[in-house]
Amino acid sequence: MNTQQMEQMGQFKITVWEEENFQGKRCEFMQECQSIMERGFHKIRSIKVENGPWVGYEYPEFQGQQFILEKGDYPRYEAWSGNCSYRTEHMLSFRPIKCANHSDSKVTLYESEDFQGRKFEMCDDYPSLQAMGWCSKEVPSMKVNSGAWVAYQFPGYRGYQYILERDRRQGEYRCYNEYSTQAHTCQVQSIRRIQHH
Image 1 (spheres, rainbow, N blue to C red):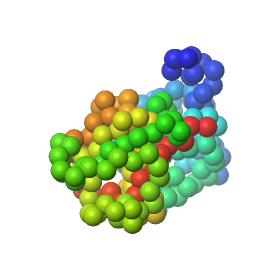
Image 2 (image 1 turned 30 degrees about the horizontal axis):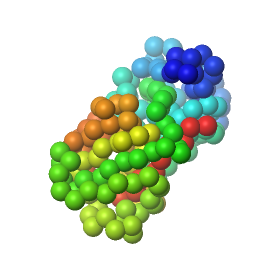
Image 3 (image 1 turned 90 degrees about the vertical axis):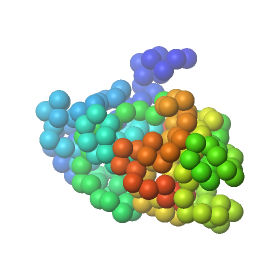
Image 4 (image 1 turned 135 degrees about the vertical axis):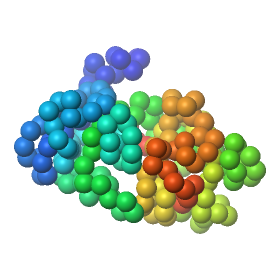
């Protein structure tokens, strides 16, 4: 089954509201939205993800801070921004994460840019990379071999979120600034697989 067939069958579905607690103007989506403002919204303040994982962005055109959105309810911005060191109260664009496969995900971390130096291959979630033996608070480059991952700035899945996908950039992130348009450091201390529901 191809991605277009999956979209038609409702494999990806998200509903957004302009106000907190599922109030105000609402709209359902089954595919990406480059700018919610083009739909007459000023902002998104609450979300329900019914199918598929999604990534939300702070700005239009998939720019700015990223937020992982898995199946569930997000009544206020804190529910999706979590324990970020940088808080944003709205989201202006989003798209489905089509390559997420929780049972078949593999990523390789490298100690230097351009896939150089010591490397570590992972197939599981790690709330603390240092606890599992990574000797640094930084991960300068990564290669996603399969699936989709969300890397976090701090241990315990906290801080900035970086969505890393096999079907974007051929899964190759040669330098930390390729993790996100808002990546200002290569500090990554926890990582987990993205689930597809």
